[in-house]
Length: 153
Image 1 (cartoon, one colour):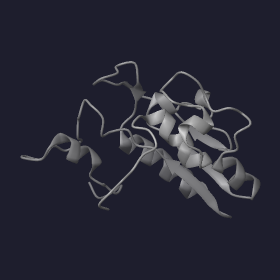
Image 2 (cartoon, helix red, strand yellow):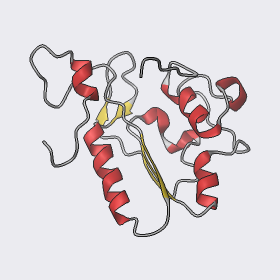
Image 3 (cartoon, rainbow, N blue to C red):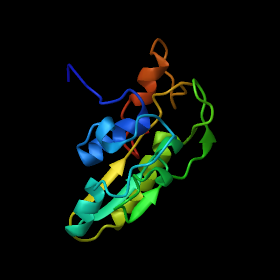
């Protein structure tokens, strides 16, 4: 991918756009932690759930906690945070990607039938950078976004 675009350069306002197809001025969320998604704005997980999908969400930053409305439509919504964040906003609680991915994989393994929709949000590539296996000469940000498959180390 040569170009990537976001409707907002911060976490909470950008995610409702993914799930509603509405820009921040339309869905009403413009900053982290100030307000939640209005109940009258339909979200993708509700539509899929109503169409017979099993729905699970596994988030890694407190700015996406269920209290902001992105849990709507998810029968499983795991927003358990294990550590205090750092960097520019130490009020954000977070968890490492491997914890969120392991929870999502466990949920996926339990889905025996039907279609499913699984959302996994990873927050690792934010300050402070603490890659699980730092490599000499590699920028710590790159180490945090490196894809690792469970069981491959």
